[in-house]
Every structure is written in C-alpha cells, then in structure tokens.
Amino acid sequence: MKKFRKVMLFIPMLFAVNLNAAVILSMSPSTTNAMPGDIVVLDLMISGLTAGSADSLGDFDLDIFYDSGALSVDSFSLTGLLGDFGTLGALDISLGDDTFGTIGLGITSLLSTIELDALQAGSFSLATISFMVNVLADGTSTEVGIGTVYALGDAFGDPFTLMRTSSAFIQNGVQVNEPGIFVFMLVLPLMMIFRRRKI
Image 1 (cartoon, rainbow, N blue to C red):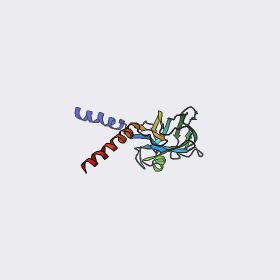
Image 2: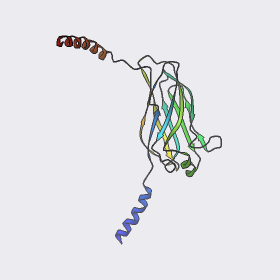
Image 3: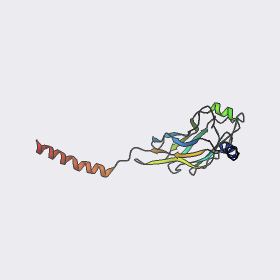
Image 4: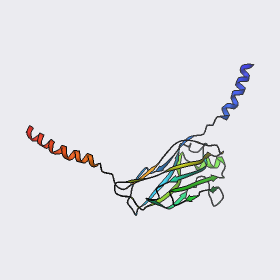
C-alpha cells in the first residue's frame, strides 16, 4: 500500500516538470564586411524549437544593443509567425530604437497553441534589422548583440530555458597583424641566404 501511495504521489510530479525546449538566440550573419555608407541587414534568430509541434514560441520581449557611434538603425520589421498584427493575431509590444544604442523588440501572440505549432519551424527569424554604417575605421569592427531578455515563453506562457546568445560583428576589412608581417620580412631574406649556401 505504501509503495502504491508513493507511485501516486510521483505521477503528478511528472506532469509538473517543465519540458520546455532549451533555445538559442543569435544575430545572423555572425560576420559582415562593410564600409561607412553601407547598409547591413541582420536577423534576430531563435533555434531549438520543435517544428510543427510544441514547444512553440508564444511571446518574447528583449533588447538589442549596438554602438550608436558607429551605426544607426535604418529600419526593422517583426516576424509574422506569432500572428498577424492587422487581424489581432498578435500584439507588437516593441519599444523600438532609442537612438542611443538599444532597440526594444517584443511580440505577444494571441493565437492558440495549435495555430502556433502549425506556423512555426524549429528555427526562424524573430526580427530583421537594417543598420546604416556611419563610422567604422579600416581594420576595426563593431558588435550588435542581444542584451536583456525580459520574456521568452511558449504558447502557454511558460518560460523557455535560454541556453545562450550570440552576437554579430560588422567589420571594415581584416585587421593586419603588423608584428607578424615584420617577423616574416626578417625571416624571408635569411631563408634565401641559407638556400643559396646549400646550393
């Protein structure tokens, strides 16, 4: 009888365990070459979901950071995979660009879990952001990354486990390793002298 009671107590615990996916947020592409005057387009990506079934994304609210001394936001758009804003399938809760280096992005879906499961793949873009490169010296780079994540939940409102985030880097050319070149210029004549002596 005692064993039976222990089993009965354990069963509800199985259903109480949070089986939500462990997801990853990333900026894509991870590296872009650009010069002042160029437009760079980056996507905020989520991955780690299960395509066509739970756990689907039901809401997110987060900040994107960038260097306002190097970049300015040209435009941004949000995904339609949490619902259509025009038909009240989802609410746009974004604060937008503060022009000082932070973009607040967020959506709350009003769709059912079945509708969200049918819409979403295992990974997809949450937002697309276009940046204007204003100042970026030769051989330097600037970072665009994911800042504070205020909310990231499934269709039931339960929070996902955020495994990690990754940034994107916009670079103007490849930085030259000057000490390495100097050593190479010294070694090359010595190699030629040694080769002549062997001949």
